[in-house]
Image 1 (cartoon, rainbow, N blue to C red):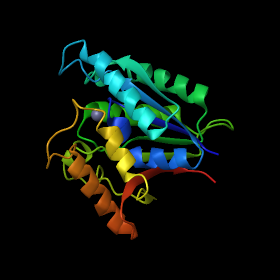
Image 2: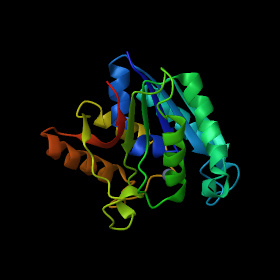
Image 3: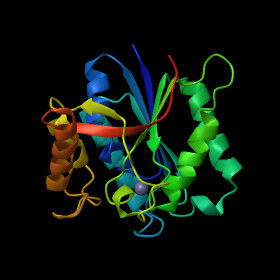
Length: 221
Ligand SMILES: [Zn+2]
């Protein structure tokens, strides 16, 4: 049985690239914990939206069967204004407490700065020291950020690890539908139609109906 930790920058980032995989883990009997570093509301909404976003996240986690979604409460779109050590220590504390075998987090090439900061902090927090570090660190794409980055091979999302989510795509969309303020109409990448067609695209790559794709940051066997 795997102990899975999903580390996201903003509310709904814990779903966009990985919700179908979370539901697969739960179906396999694995334990899934989600962490959302920022409150996701400072720059866009009234302060009361923080509470609502967290309620959305808890509903989505319940749909997927995740054990818990935890909110670290950092300021939205300001993670790069914090000393990186502050972000690392907050994430490291969760990693040490949960002791995951598999970690999913952001890709370094995203256009969103918070995503880059979380990626950097996760790589430090999950460094292979001692016996209990996560043996898999997998980086998900975040629709409406990963594909909007500049065309640089060094930051391109080139996945090598795929998860068949044909049996969980509906659960993924049901979970995403909980985030009513984050959804957009098609063809926006955060629309339900776009998420379904993106999963169908990755599915084509591996000969399945739907899939999610990941870059392998580290894999230890
Ligand atoms: Zn985000």
